[in-house]
Image (cartoon, rainbow, N blue to C red; front, top):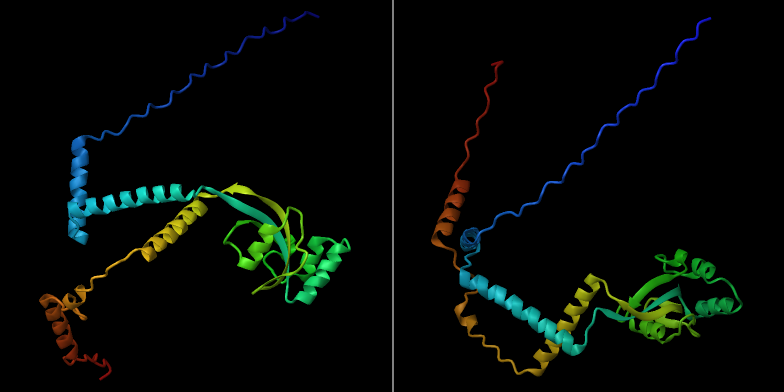
Length: 252
């Protein structure tokens, strides 16, 4: 037998991967002349569509800026911040005080809150969640409920049923702290405080309302002549008899 030589292994070259560079972002050219052209185009459109000229636009923008400045100053003066005192509470709502006292007694005997909420509560939106109402601030609940909830300590259950227009509540506070407001809630709070402030200023001011415009503005505005002419033409067309065309019977 003649020995044969084993084949020699050759290295397989690994292909070189060249990274692809990301394209360089270039800013869109926007010249002063481009701004002037766009500004004039906007003015022309507003003038044609809503009869606004440049003076009107500047007045609207200036009014918005003044309102924002006044709102900011008023909120700072009143100490309105993007946070508020809130409580986290749960409740069991029943129809009458007698049933509420029955539930209170069973809680004092050590029965589970969530089970009792599921069994008794008429608030179907949260009864299967143990009556959890989540976090809420002042003004979110009816006054009687709010007063009781904010007066309780964390973990404490209202010793007596709290009566509201919805029925009889048993309340337990789970948390009580100052919490940040969401952007939408803070915007709503700003609007509320601003309207309250504006109302108080109006009530305290001596405002003279001049109603001379009543004599100058007609009760029924007169229509332009071209519109009246168009309406008259339409009425005349509708009053003319319409010709009825009966298709011929091919069998006759």
